[in-house]
Image (cartoon, rainbow, N blue to C red; front, side, top):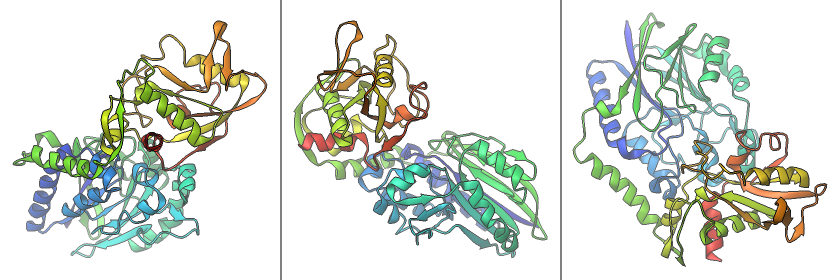
Length: 446
């Protein structure tokens, strides 16, 4: 008999307030199991890094890698936050100093080769001789990866390419899946040879795991609220029992000075970002068009080289005045939202713009889609004017219903929750890796 202890985290999103406690827990549990001569593995399932946090933004994620190293992670896979929120070179060197393996089977460079910093899978061997094959997959945002210079394959098809190799080399197969729960369930049904799926991306919380056929699926929520733990019992190199549980981080033993430690991580990033960009006098109100929100909207139109643009004022979360730094821009515009340009007929553009002027638009609550605020806020326009009887003018010319116009918008409006009658079938051009705050910085420096 052999007992293997597997701990996992996912979708921390740089919520490092709880990290000192998580770190202490993981290191103490590792020591406990090793003293009991039990094998211990520690995996992260992606989106550990999120550029809303000053440390993550200022160090291009390198500060997060140091934390994973200190906690002794065995291997990680990447999430979309690591994958599409950094320029090509930043991701290509993100793991240069990692002391753990990076497993992502479906990420390639433009030469159809896996980059040097990752492996599609890794085989580990316990002291008892059991071989454990670990493979990773990340969410299929293929268009965004292509724009950054990467090539992403369809994850289930990619998994099929490696299953025979994994079966030949492994007694136990573990999938690190940043795909979401529904995909995990689909994989468990299609590939019963997979013993454990450690999941993420959809922030699902499975207190005792979920058994689907032969496969145990586990997920530990988001933002470091839980640490996942799967105990695997092996007899004659065959898994005979799997048990999953979650630890509530707030119920774990506190760490001396843990608040000061997490504040120091924040302060470290803030210090690096404390570079003066410009000097402003400005007041902010999400329900009114302000100088700052108008500057951002104009910057969006210019960056995308579009005929017109609109944003929601709720994207600006605070006011700026006096000397403005990169940290200030991160504070008031933390969203991982990219510019996007879409081509519309005048008739389609009119329908979209009138929707942004509806009575309840500004009060709409927005959750997800990269938006880190609360309410939509008023609409802010660039080269768009409204006259009497809802007559619309673009670049001081009356809207021609048959003409084609280019509209620049925050990409959150293109993900299927807004303008459902117009946007879904339209060709969209995304601009990566710049976030909206990068455009605001560019415009302010002008």
